[in-house]
Length: 79
Image 1: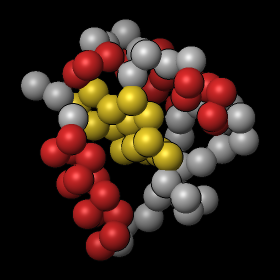
Image 2 (image 1 turned 45 degrees about the horizontal axis):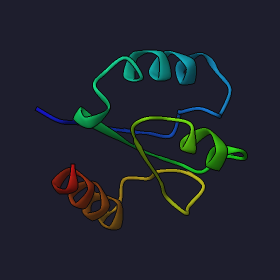
Image 3 (image 1 turned 120 degrees about the vertical axis):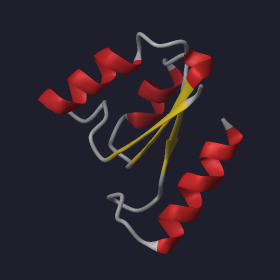
Image 4 (image 1 turned 180 degrees about the horizontal axis):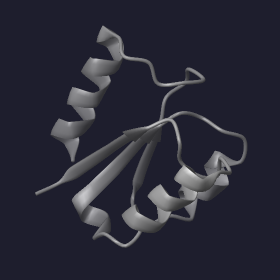
């Protein structure tokens, strides 16, 4: 089974939930999941250092709208 984490709160953004999500998800098999999240300063270097797939949208936040639903469905099929 594969998983897709969809969140606005993921490192390198600083905060408690961001750290908790990173600590939980980084312990999974990197081939078993992907992360879809919002952009943040310094994210390119952070993402490159991870062993799992991280996709960042262009918009500043993830919002529930049809375009986002299609992106989630597409990424879920890819993983």
